[in-house]
Length: 153
Image (tube, rainbow, N blue to C red):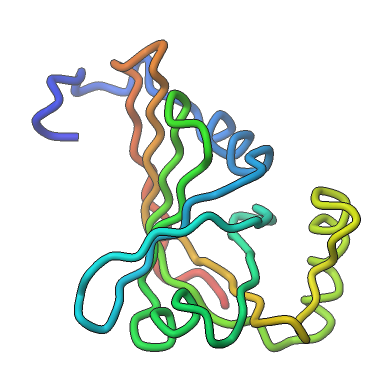
């Protein structure tokens, strides 16, 4: 992470498991999308981190959904800024009913009594490209993870 004066080696960097724990446990997430006029839009969403992807739902006519229809690039951030995980990626709407049913189990467990209900709005999968972790207790441990771009859909 150029410009931060961090060590060049890998010693002291955060393990991916640290970031993944926070992605799984966060209750609220910031989702940042881009409006058609190129201005940012940030909103809180509920979601789940499952098998290396972030899933959330939103109304089909919501600003988030309209932004993602025009530009799938987005950013997802966990709720605790002092243990921040920031994921940059692209979102695609999930249309497979079996996948939505499978994802509904951890979603319902996390947000009981709410369910992942595609009749209320689209279900989206965010495919990460890069993630950043920053832990306030150990600023020197700021870490970047890069994901393969050829991951299966």
